[in-house]
Amino acid sequence: MKLKTTFLMIIALTLASQVSAQKIKVKRDKEVDFSNYKTIKFLGWQDDIEELMDKEDQDLMLSSFAKEFKSRGLEGSEEKADLIVSLYLVLEYKSNTESYTKFYGDSYAKGRGSRDGEGWKQGHSSSPYTKNYYIKGTLVLDVHDNKTNLLIWQSVGSDVVNEKPGKKGKGIPKLATKMMRKFPVKPIQ
Image 1: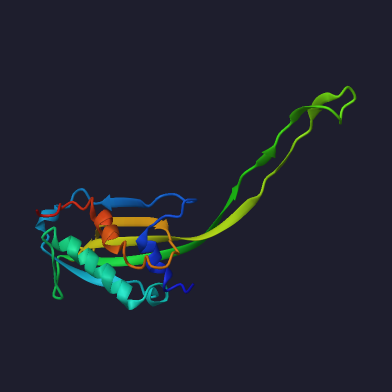
Image 2: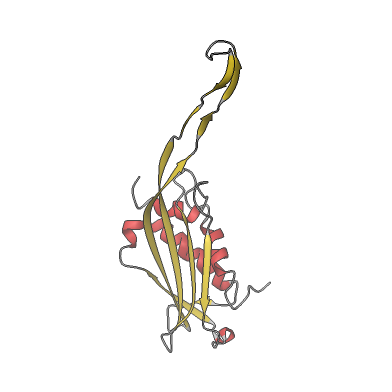
């Protein structure tokens, strides 16, 4: 499967059962009053994003985050905005090993096979294992104050890429909502 198409599988965030669940980590500058900000501008993605994700997926991700910011009263601006937002994606290729033991235990038997006609018979076991390969994706959303150029808020989401076809793009809005859940300005009802 091409690396470009794997990004949306990350965003779908349907987990493979053998790996840990989606995680979101948030950092913020607690001295900043976020109610003073009214406009945002998306800087976009890192330079190599075309190798990781196609244009349609990039646009869907940007529009999902734009909707989240707008629900908090922050409007997009092409001019000098209060906040600058950028996105980064990292893919890691990993593996894990699963094993289980099939045990065919001892048994007590009467009849042939022992001197007195009864006794324990020795059991045996086998431990087949499988090696699973997967891709862990990490999406980083950075928010900078445009006047000071300081990072004031960051949300990092990581999960396993789901390689099932048909899941493309379905989880992007949910991911954006989950990553923005702890943004200091709550959505306006």
